[in-house]
Length: 226
Image (tube, rainbow, N blue to C red):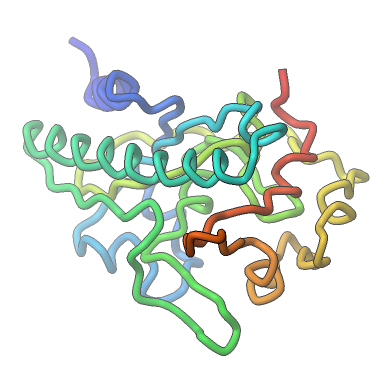
């Protein structure tokens, strides 16, 4: 009989996820108060992380309008997959809460222009064995580099966690993402100054829409480009 973990992964992939990883809540002990899985679901035992790949062409060559539209589509698709995952978990006798892939979230510092989601999807993805952080703080996956978007589902089902990625995906001497940042927002220790980054990330179009425009640090990363 197929085990529950494999059933969960097959279900997520059948719904459109490109990658699926499993993390134990014990991996989040260092997370800030209010941003642990148990803060979302008190008897949480497992976090399931789902990823969708971003087409290289959109990142590398597409206009900002195409890049922005792709990001919005992915947020909606990932939230839908996470919703269906939660329903499937309930059908297996568990309880699950999807964490929004982007907005909304409570934690926002207007002075620093710094936000923090209810759960860090990229930290969850690293704990679930999907990849490792690059110097620009984005998750790098072995399959698709940093060209992925993420969502997480917190559940009380006790699933075996996946092993961490041991390979060094971000070359130690590579600083191309740091050098390419137009506003020098990438600092030491895989940190990004959100105030500085956000000052250049968005563009207001003549019609009034505000769109994502900058993705230089994602574009120049050589990892995952086939």
